[in-house]
Image (cartoon, rainbow over all chains, first blue to last red; front, side, top):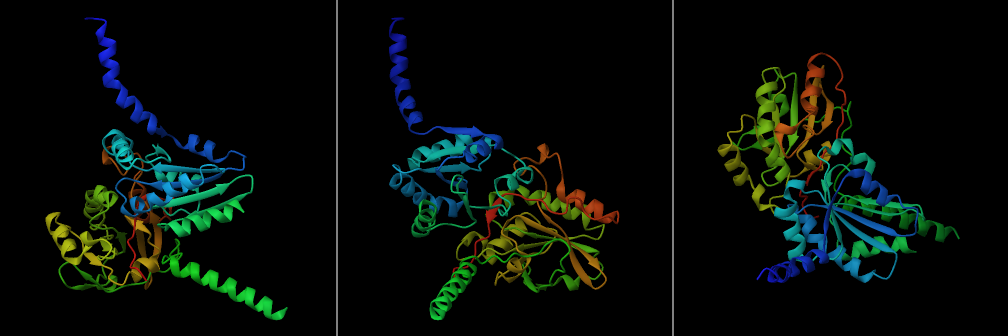
Length: 163
Length: 207
């Protein structure tokens, strides 16, 4: 019977393995985010700061998902940075990401004191969510948006970066 | 050529104007600015102005609301701030600027219910036109301003966060606003006088 154990286990674990492959939510600190956003390449980053409790954020998420899919073959990277508390990762964030089937990369920024790091993300950010940062380091382009996007506006702003 | 130039300038002007129209938030106050007074409806139905309280040395004006998890997380700490600093001359005045159409949980009736159930010891005012929030430059909840009386003026002396841990009051290391008020009470400028925090966006009326 003992030989059955791994088999049974793997059958149970398979679905989890598949779903976690679909979307991992890495918990990161600010230096890692900074590192990712300072790559000197021609990728246009769309970094959206959101939270599962933020209604306007949730409303605009499909626009980011649409852009992520539509520009998959171009040098465009959508990064959804959850501002949920790290204690809510398994309870709120992961189930939300799974339920919505989010395809864009989701990370959770685990930094409790915004005053100590917000200006390193952007000096213009007053702290309201949603907040979106668009940047292309090679083209030296950078723009910030402290409001909710419509699909048309997001695409139009992205186009400015791709020209 | 001139006409083309004029056209370009006109387009540019429209773009600039357009960006102002879609962003309802003005740059708002910086530390050192003179703060405007207001006349807003309190949850008890009476109109409240800062000028009504002539004994106060200043005010802790906090833009907050019923519905935002950050505002809820800070609710008890705001009540504590009032208990601690109202006797020293700095009472809390709470203002809810959310559009009740966009956020039904912030209706006047819901504000009354919340103030009653949590026994707010301070006024909880509705900024119906959102003009006060816009003038102050409040963008999120909670967003806090300390005003100090200087002659006949009320001057903005601190803007920003309450402390450095919204999730858990027990894990707070730096009490930003408490430190600022203690500086002010000691006759010194608040250091730091501006801090930043994450919060829910104020729900603006659709133009």
